[in-house]
Length: 257
Length: 287
Image (cartoon, rainbow over all chains, first blue to last red; front, side, top):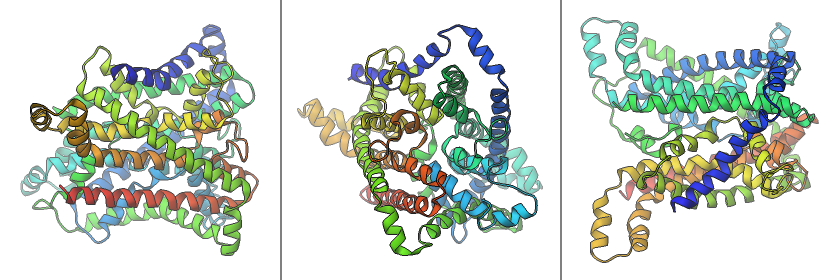
């Protein structure tokens, strides 16, 4: 059985991913280095960095807020909110893109109004951020919620009776207690945000040097037979993915302790 | 305690989320809480609910007749059929292989197990487009194995198998860890063979987790886009999955047609999620 599992995982996961690393450097480091210097690539790095940065911040703030609300309070519609939080994970990224275009596009419900006031959403950074946040929405909350539940409210109440305000209680008591789960959720959503392809490809318009992200570069350069660039960008993304997995697995035991 | 990555998929945790009673002091919203709730709900509406409602409304914007003809157009129908059929097949493989992988990871000890533990989550972390490229490297035209699956339906199957791999593993694993050995030992001491022990003792305990993982796998599989883009060649009527078909419709400015197929996907995903919730509730009632 062990053999079956190892073979299955090797042929589905390990060998294909290793092959990418090998292919990337099959002609040495020079072509990879050259591909990384390409203006389109550096622009993609910048755009990906900006979109991921903003998205992760939004994900984190929203994730912590919604976790506190769902765990610490009882209110009308709580179950409903809890249920729709998971919705984004079951929706095709292309549908996410379409949905955003229908509302925020030039001829969308709000898009026309926003554009008349000089705020373009679709085919620009704001749309890409919206798409990225949509697809990674529940990740932070689903990590933080179980921990919030386990730690209970005694310490928070103690802090409150000793005269701490809500902000102080959160900063001094709640935040330290959830920090590992939060870190884990942040790394997870960062990995997801970096690699978001489907939704971003629909809303970005793929303007070279402007709204092109790393995953979009992979696709486009591969279709244009620029294999070196495709492999280089893939290599970077895969390396980051593996690095975040390693970080996550290192964070895990600490959380348990 | 439950060690599952992407906690979103761990029913063990969900279970606790739903059942824990409000601890003393968990209470009604104060002014700050109400403000937070308002903002969170507003954000969720602007980001998720209103856009999704727009998709559904758009699909019926030219009447139910147009919706029907958009969904039953040959390429749309072929894409939907391929998507659902392949996803079912993939979920089936995931049930068997996912349970097996979880079993080996929990009950077996061998060198390199910790590496496998980390590797399992790779499909969650790896960008989907990279997943497609990665599979193409091994199973594409330049395959070192001389297996070329590119632009075939097998490629779609492979791509979906890759992206759904962790779901069943990660839902079954925590249950398996907490499963008591006593029952199995008792059964074995009464003369049950290993197979009988697995079928009569272990499997019934794992069934809810397996079902949950499978539902998540299926929901993910029908909505997958990135991994299939490079691998399948996107040949209409042959290897085009629903998401790719929708993307094509968006590009050719047929948003109503795209919205129609998207609505079918949305409803399917929603039904799967509802079925999953009902199933978990039923499993819990049975104890």
